[in-house]
Image (cartoon, rainbow, N blue to C red; front, side, top):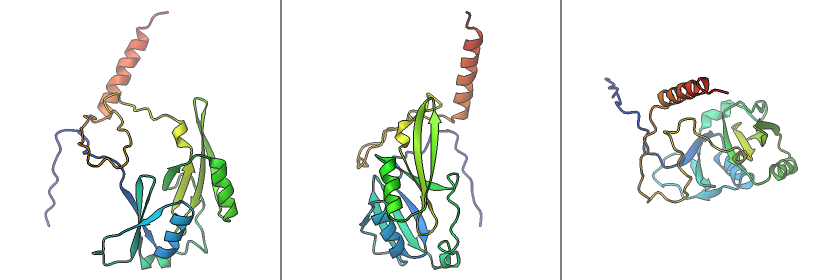
Length: 197
């Protein structure tokens, strides 16, 4: 088998619109389905009938979650030996309106969780971390408290548009990132050195 690697001469990013879905391998689709519906408020949506494996599709908050049953996961027993809840672990994050309500409801459901606080320039973000039935980390936060500021001025952020896949995509030249950032920082440093008091 010969694999050809095509070199891209331009650093222009792919014409992406948004995150569509996250796929998760699960031991028991129905157990995970109940968790994502009851705890996180996702809704079961129709899944193509051509699939020849057990799974479920859920959707809410502008993103889908695809649950794919994998019997091999039964060898990993996350229920008897739960992984530590580590905020630095891979995770899916959802924004919420009230972190205190999230914590109270998790306590009512008897779910273990840990909290963390991130602070930047006096702005605080509260985070709550817990696992789904298969040990995947979930974060609930008020992350929108911290503004998203692109490092490179040549890479404008695209606004989140729900249900606008019919709109034409207007590509932005994001550059390679590192070069523009390095040039910007070098220019800024030179300007600061030339600044007189």
